Length: 172
Image: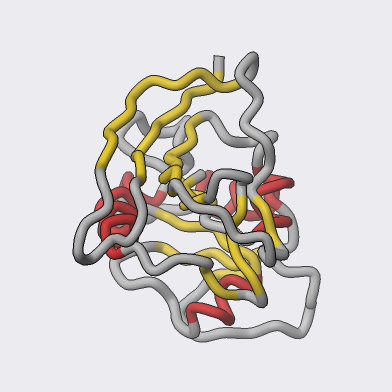
């Protein structure tokens, strides 16, 4: 899973990200490029197009949903089966099928909540900010389930208005 969250696990408001943090966007691009991403339909619609240089899978309950350039699944199990049955390159296979491959869950809130059971690694940008009007939140990162493995801390600058840290967690 990969996400940028506020002090209270805030993710967004009205289907938009809360903060404009170019460093977080660059980090997201660096980590996910060349890999598969799984997102919910609302997240896909907020982005407006498939993310380039990634295999895009959209999870939805809407059996009539169609979009060019993405694969559609109706459950995480179905989404993961797309990778197991694929003849595509190793970066597109399930993470347990190839040590070099990762599948990123990129949101939204309900997808993160459901996906937490499947995640073995979290890439979290902790943004030192709060938004009391947020309407979607990242699930709690439970320390007995996920342990912090790396942390890279940065101060606010002319482009990034808040202090932030890139933190990686791994499931015990």
